[in-house]
Image 1 (cartoon, rainbow, N blue to C red):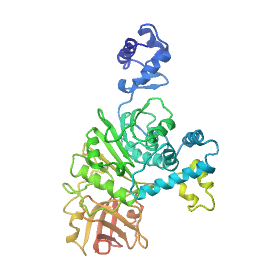
Image 2 (image 1 turned 30 degrees about the horizontal axis):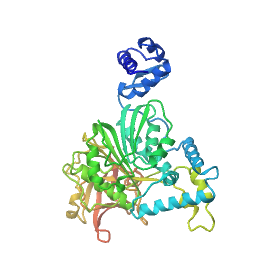
Image 3 (image 1 turned 45 degrees about the vertical axis):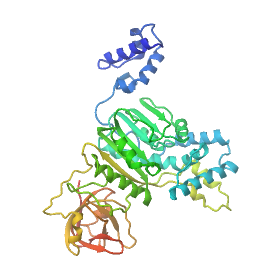
Amino acid sequence: MNDDQRSQILDTARYLQNVRPIDPEELRDYVEGHPHPAAIRQVLREHAFELGMAEREEGFVPVADGPIAISGPVGRIPEDLDSRLEALLVERFGRHWATGESATTLRERITRLKADYFAREPVEYDAVTALAYAIYHLYDNYAVMQHAIGSLIDAGLIPHHCRILDVGAGVGGPAMGALELLSDGLIEYHAVEPSPAISVFERLWEGRTNQSVRFHQETAESFEPTGEYDLLVFANVLSELDDPAATLARYTEYVAGDGSCLLLAPADQNTAIELRTLERGLADDGELTVYDPTLRLWPNETPGSDAESWSFTIKDDIATPSVQRRLADSTPAESDQEPTAFVNTDVQYAYSVLRPDGRRRTELAPNSDRFTPMADSGSVVSDRVDLVGVKLSHDLGSDNPLFLVGDGSQQTDHFAVVVRETGLNETLITAPYASVLAFENVLVLWNADESAYNCVVDDEAVVDRIA
């Protein structure tokens, strides 16, 4: 098909798109040479995003206006994803990849990946290391992204006609998790990944109608974004960048005015604290607003650098993928490692969502006549006060329920500790992570051992969730 025919197809589609569904069979009558409908359909698919048209049973139709809804369950791993990864393993190592020398190699690579990560050493990827990473991390990354983007979809912040940029896409776990939830939309997804991991992603990805994935085997530093993106994603890559602050600042310039920047990091102390440091650089020194979870509830107040306890959320575990189970089950009895070292079903992650439009997940203007900012806690030690704050951890206590909390003004860490649970304060225990809470009549104490403030919740205190 020549360029003139393509132009005629696209011009006719633009003319008819608001009149009726476009049928490739009908469109051939408008094109010189009357090309086959299958060829016309392919042209329309290739240009669907720029036309703003989705392919449906009735033909190509304008994509719906407004936000998209979640398609399918959140956090459940599809069986065919396991099958596709196993097919790659069989192709590389043969049918018995989970035993013998190949299994030993994969276990060694997984062990090395984890050791390098905890030592904060750069990981050098080759084809085998990329497969080992996929065995261990494809599935939890898939689930993490679904939970993270699912909350944005629920809030109506992801449009049907959506352009996404994923920097450090790896083997594609986050991307495939997102695309599964967005299966009803018209999606242009750009995946930036310099290592051989991108080849695993390309092989695992099975194209879906109305979704275009464009692979860019480039570093984050060398890739040049174009246009605006409705969603910018940095998933588990911030700690691997040479200058994450500068790189983030450059990329956020390409977030649409009503778009979101989603940062994800593993739930360990170093990466979670680094994420919050980068978040402060974007929100407190730049033009972005924290949408979720570490809200700045008080105008013109920002958290201090000493408020650095790590904050992450926990979701339900995923079922053990069969490739992990097979590799674990074949671990020799004399091995230095337990078989469970090759199983990763936890869904725990630190995250930040930032937006250029000033929107926050919970819009709240605390009444300064009633509530005390946490920035002023030093002046109210041993007093009972009213506070507002975000629940920023799951239960950290050993003897009493203990939760990290913050209002965006805190200069050092604050913990809410329940010393006597009642029906009037149990909300602190039962509320989900990132809930905004009102604390009435809590006792503020300084904890010298932890260099932090304790907000004591006893039978005189009341805790309510702010919608």
